[in-house]
Length: 99
Image (cartoon, rainbow, N blue to C red; front, side, top):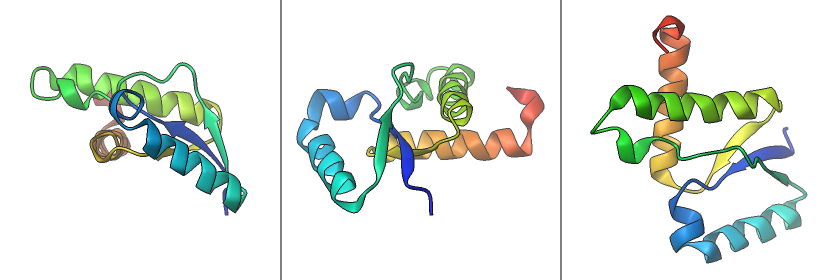
C-alpha cells in the first residue's frame, strides 16, 4: 500500500476550508501516511471548464504530470478537483494525442 501522496488542495480548501486540511493532515500523521506538498500545483481547471474546456484540461493535465514526476498518487480534498483530475486522467489514457 502506498504511504505517500501528493496533497492537492486546489483553490477552495486553502480559502474556505482550512480546518478540513488541518484535520486531514492530522489523520494522515496518525495513520502514518505522508502527505507531500507540491508547490507547483495550480488550479485543477474545474472553474474554467464551462468557458474553455481545453484550458481546464491543460491545467488538470499539468497537475497530473507534476505528481507523476514525483512518483506520487494525488490525494484531493475537494470533490470538484477530484472530478476534474479523474476525468482528465481518463481522457489522457483514452486519447493522449489530444492534449
